Image (tube, rainbow, N blue to C red; front, top):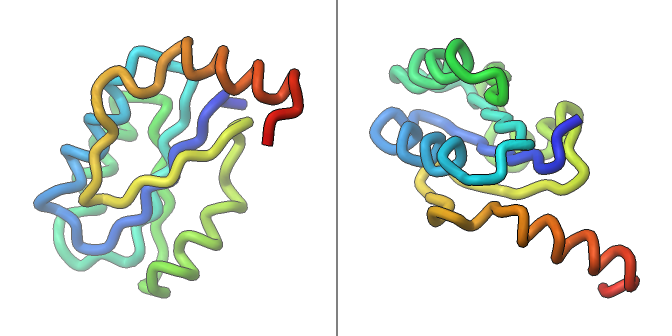
Length: 116
């Protein structure tokens, strides 16, 4: 079980999805899973995502026929294993040094002190 699950739904995102994936994989905190939900892309999105899955065990690619963003994202919850979930779209980036041990410490304190 990863500490963070990052859910990334994508449909025909071949031009941008690599940047989104790389923004996750270069974070300093490494206990993450990146769940890429390929929504039946008809371009090279699936192939691009599959290449990342081959070289980094934190990447998991789920592909299926096109069902639309809402259902794609909702179905993705069945695959998450992390304690916390971060949502990312294929045209978004996570800024460098955003997922850090300091963030984990903050979240652990929030739970410990029952902060909503």
